[in-house]
Length: 264
Image (tube, rainbow, N blue to C red):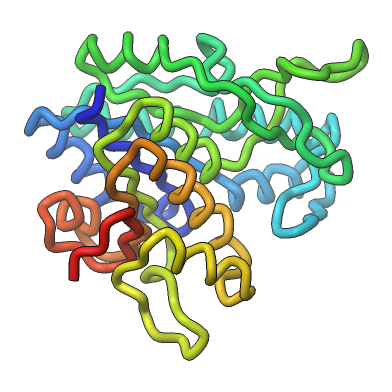
């Protein structure tokens, strides 16, 4: 499993993922085993609005009460997941859609009671991922998982997990070859707004500590640092760019690479 590439798609790439999906199909054709993790925050907000449920955020994360959790599960594990899987399969790829609930893949507890049913990952069971990969399919993972630890009798059996965190945990658990974040910015920037092409872990941690890295970049950088325990290369690239994923895998990508050994 150390040849697996873990790819997280989200942000603008979910709205215009034509080349991303094409690239996934092409990489699979070349024999690259991949796990795809997706978000879907914008679609969740749209469906919450349709249901008359307001969205509230704490530290950049959606507060998830029981009603919100029902919509999050339906949208992520249903609508968004199946749209991605259908597109891959219709272009000639072979994909299977699952969530963190399936095979007890993602197990956790409530991370911060102020955020409601938002999970902190405690354990990753990769059995189902390996079974799907060994069957020649790309697992496409929705970030809903099991409420396995410290669950009270009246609490729901599932939790809403941050997709960036899930991607980092899966990469670490699989000893992945590479973790790639496809997002809607061109990478990590310094205080002056300059793109930082390469970062060592200590440099990435300093950006977090100083507050230079903020908002949605925080969980991505933290996930990269988590994955580096067993994944040699992590990167954050602009998924809006045509064929960004393919270029990254071929060594011609842009964005920011975070790895333990700097190569300048």
